[in-house]
Each structure stands twice: as C-alpha cells, then as structure tokens.
Length: 529
Image 1: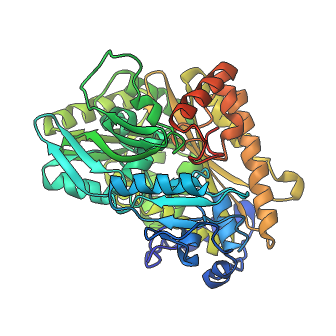
Image 2: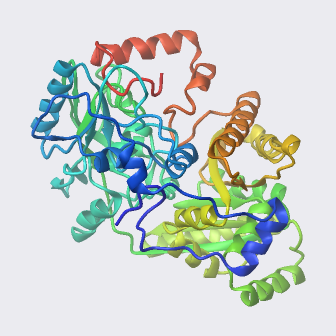
Image 3: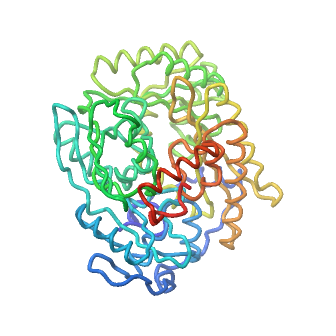
C-alpha cells in the first residue's frame, strides 16, 4: 500500500549502509528518530465536510487525509507531526470527462474551490487545500488513465490525463513506442501533472521536456471546454497549449492529452567519467552539449555530491578499487562524476558515445565504464525511498532547483551552497549540501541542490528551519539571475518569487488570462499566483 506520510509503497525500503550513517553523523551530527503521528489520530482530526452529498464525492476522513498534502518537506512535517492545517472537504473520483464536467458544475453550485489531483507528488504545494471559509473539492483523476488512441504513422498517442508513468510506458512499449519522459517521480506522477507543472524528465536532453512532447488535448474549464488539436505546427496566433503548460490547475482540468512518441530505442547505455574538479567538469559538460552530441542525458555532480553518492551507495570495496584507479590517473580529492546517457539506434549510440568520451578526455576526464551508469539507472526511481530511511534516522532532506546561463552557473552553485550551508549556523546546527547539473542546454544548465539537516523534537522547529533554508536559497537564486523553478513549478512555495521573473505587466497578463478560463476564481486558488 502507498504510504500516507512518505514516499512510495510501504513494502519498499532503501537501506542506509553503516558507513552512510557514520558519514551523515560526521557532517550534521547524530540523528534521533522522531515520534510520528498515527494515521488514525490524524484522520480523527478531520473536520466535518462542508460540501453537500454527491454520489461521486466521498467525505470519508481517510480519503481526505490522503489528499491533504503532497511530497514537499513541509508536507512531510505536517503529516508526520500530526499538524495538518487543512483538509479537502470531499474527494471526487470521476471516470470520464463528462463526470469531471459534472464535478465542476457541482463545485460551482456549492461555492467550492477545486483542486485537480494527479499522482500527489508535488513538492511545492500544488495540491494542498488552503484554510478558509470556502469548502474545497479535490478531483482525483486517477480513473482517467487509459490509452485512448495511437497513431503510429503520426507518432501520436492520446491518454487520459490521470495515467501514471509506468502505465503510460507499458501501453506504449507494447506497441513498440516510448514517451521517454522519466522524472524521478515517474512511478506515481501523471501525464496531466507533468503538463500542468512543465515537467522535465531525466532524459529530456534526448526526448525533450514535456512542452515538446505535449501535442494537444482537452481542458475542462469553468468557462467552457478547450480543445487543443495536435497540429505538427501552426501559425494561428498564440499557442494556447502554452497556457496550459505550467498552469497548475488554475485554468481548468486537463482530462486527456495527446503526446509525441518515439520508437523504442535499439540501444541505451549510461557511462561514467570522472573529472579532476568541478570547473573541469563544467567545461567538459558544456562542450559536449554545445557540440550537439546525440545524448539523452548529462548529469554532473559536484565533489561533495560525488562523495555523498559513493558513500551512500555502499559497496565500499568496489569504491576503494575505483578510487585507486582514478588516483593513479590524476583524479582524486576534488573529483566530480559525469554521467552520460546514450539512447537510440545502435550506430548513433556508438557515434555519440565515442564523441562525448573524446570531448571529456580533452578536459582530463577519466572514463570509468558503465558500472556507475547501470547503478544509477537501476536505482533512479528508488532513490526517493531514501527520504523515508533518512527521516526514520532523524534527518530531514529536501531539494530545490533553478536554471541559469553558463556565465552564471558556477556562481549560482557556490551561492546556493553557501546560503544553505550557513543557514542554521546561529542555531548551532549544520546542513549537508550537495548539488548536480541535471539538465543541460547549449545556453546554460539547471542546478539541482539537495540539503539535509537534523529533525528537531518539535515539528514546528523543523518547519521553521526549512523556511529559513528555503528563503535563503531562493533569495540567492534570484540575486544570481536564476529562475525560481526549472522543473518543479510554482505552487505555494515559490509564489512569492514569481513576480521577480515575470514583471508587473507579466503578472497582470497571467491573472487576466487565467481569469478568462476561470472567472469566479474557483480553480486551485492560492497556487501559482
């Protein structure tokens, strides 16, 4: 069964090696397992529903608890601390687009706010009800999950927007195709959620981000139904697909989506290269992506992330052998790991691999084969389970991300790392910070940072620490010219910073545009804007 207050299936674990526990204790101090609230106690605190009855809506406390929060660290703190500030008044499970429309009409007559719910994996507060006088209806789209049509000649497939990553890929793979969109939340996140938050998959360098993959679909808005035909291209004015991309449920509910698909690749390999320092790593990665080498992924870790990854992976004897090998070739203390993914036809994969490795060698890179790449591929969707293990060991862990042009990337990494690393110093608490570049472009790169600190006995203290760290890092991102979100969206957590990026006229235009689809402001209020 899926965890109600953590990540994933409660039967799946991610053990922390003994050396990993020692490593974290050395860097932030020993952790103490917190006392988590029981599900029954949280459910007992759910207030009476303010919605009238409807056959498609349940007011059951268990359903309302499971739809009260996403997967952000504040969500974990509130659920595990038993201090949830608001619950939806009801949860609907429509099975068709018509039933979604019926639920929107029900909400309008009931004066309710509506929260579209996909896989519940948001890490910035997209699906959280806000406390207030207005009742809240969460519309769970999990029953809209089927493959509705596949055009092999046009390489287009249409799905219900509630389809999860594994189900989508299984349907396409059966027909010899793939979407190639693999965010870390792949197991539980949905196609509609990817579109609504402008998601980026781990192999977006090859397959494209969701904005490239999303061809069209249907959106049910309070103002009416919007049909977006999947034209290969169009000059018929502004592209309304772009309005839905990143709209975060404010414009309406995506009920079905047509996506651009690719044939299953003949070959796929992931190789690791170690660079002597981060500056060499940035230079090598930038050179590879600007040379337009055919890859599906590039990921470059800082020295701290490289060290952390190797320690938490276990296999101490193997790691020692690798480190001796690297040291003999001039790569040791400040080494950085560069992962390169190659996907497609066998000949193209071979050409891309040879070219990328040649560029890396020009920057003193040492090729370490496929072992680290295979390990990454095997565990890439299991890694989020480590959050559960770390929490139970007394550590809170969170991530944040941005993107900047190449002239700002190095300074951005330094600034964010420093803001987080010193963020709790006046409390006598340490923060372990590590970063990688995970989506690279010819003009710049994403910067994806993970930070870890000790859980306090009082959940409110843990939450206050998170707020201090999140604020410090967000201010550093804005000050150094980065976007407030490269792939996680805005939700609640980033809303205060959006105007810095969009400007006053841009914010006014967004408000007016969304109001055209939702005149009464019933769709996911408080998110994005």
